[in-house]
Image 1 (tube, rainbow, N blue to C red):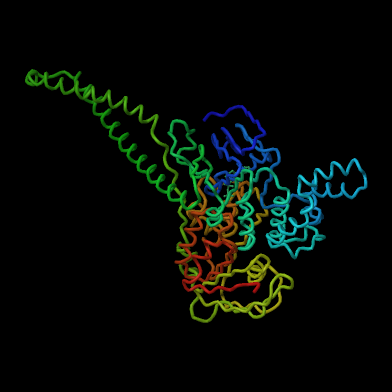
Image 2 (cartoon, rainbow, N blue to C red):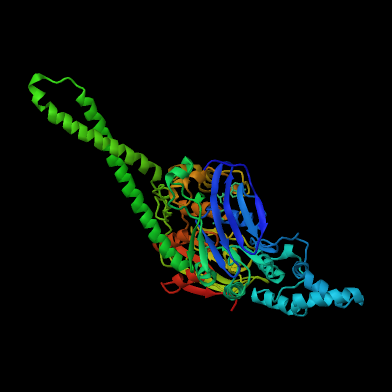
Length: 562
Ligand SMILES: Nc1ncnc2c1ncn2[C@@H]1O[C@H](COP(=O)(O)OP(=O)(O)OP(=O)(O)O)[C@@H](O)[C@H]1O
């Protein structure tokens, strides 16, 4: 694809649609020629590897960011959710919700104004907007998203990240826009809240496009799947840099009818076909190359002078040579056609190397095992006022503990308290020499301009980073390791944070919502790797699919907030 002059156009439409949208960052192509439409009543789940451009595409559709090229179609009233609340910290929750319901609240105020002119308009508006039920709708949205106990006078700066995210969702639902663009909407929701959101989305009249790594949510909500991962397009239409690139090189999109599970099966089948086709074409190219080479050698031999004794053979030799030359000519034509039409090299999916890497140093026992059978962790009466009720627990060496519980029950607080990151009351006792490390929900990189490789080297030490380079862990493609962490997508950032844990595995791994932001493929591989991990693992997750895989299997479940 050659770069074109930016031709950004946005059209008002009842569909959400893009046509020919391409986007690069600093010359690195992320989206290429993306086109699809989501009509009203359809809910499209946007999937793709970490860094494949899902958030970028949603921002372009939302008008938050312009595409380099392409057309964008969207309804006039658009709701866009990116897990952040668009409000200054001193705004109150009530102000956020009032803003979302402004037309209905204005109509109600008009009815009470005593101004007859305003009254006539207000009654029309109130009827059209269902203003009389505005309060009830507000209560239902807050309750549905687990915010019924929220003090509406609270300033949003004082709310937890999860509460702010849920307030943003509640406001979006109350605004009743014509179309919804949602970036990982289930990340901060417990079972009840996610069930509420699912029912709201299933009844939504306008088009919905949502990016998600949550399989159960995708299966329950999506009427179709839009996949941004690379397609088997002919190599000739790609710039060299995109040949075989791993993520962020989607060229066009693939759209599957139905939910995620069906799409996943079809996708795997298509990937197999792609790999088979690529291998067959490469073999044929090698054979043709050989034929062309032999042909040209024989043509050269034809011109060599011959001895008299071999003259009788000349006729046959020349005939053979003519046949070989004709074959070589045919081979060249076929070679040129195939070289032009051959499929691009399939991306080599990253394969997470797991926790069984060579230990930090042969002498040190850093394989995650702590000798003995005494608990590695004993917790008595651990509590954080207002955030976590008293918890007692004992974790044996190599034990598996699953923390579950509704929003606000204190799962992240407990994990933070265990590492001392959150101030707490009560007793937390680690066995001597035990090392625990936490994968937090959001990693903040204090120096976002440092590259991922630099950050990794700082976290694990230069010697370990040299011994075990970041690119070898199967978490980040080699093209991403030297990029500034601040420029990486949220999923890629989380992969960098995970890399530090993998390169120097602790005795106890504390994983806070491991499926948030991480791609579906990586969560599968992480789960597999954890089975082989000798150390203890504590996982806090609301992800229904992940939970169903962890319950049983020797895992103890600790339900908080009950
Ligand atoms: N402002 C930016 N500057 C440079 N690169 C960027 C910028 N924003 C995004 N990128 C890069 O573009 C690519 C796509 O990012 P994007 O956030 O759209 O991906 P994503 O599919 O949403 O990823 P994830 O699943 O990890 O959330 C990534 O490689 C990312 O690092």
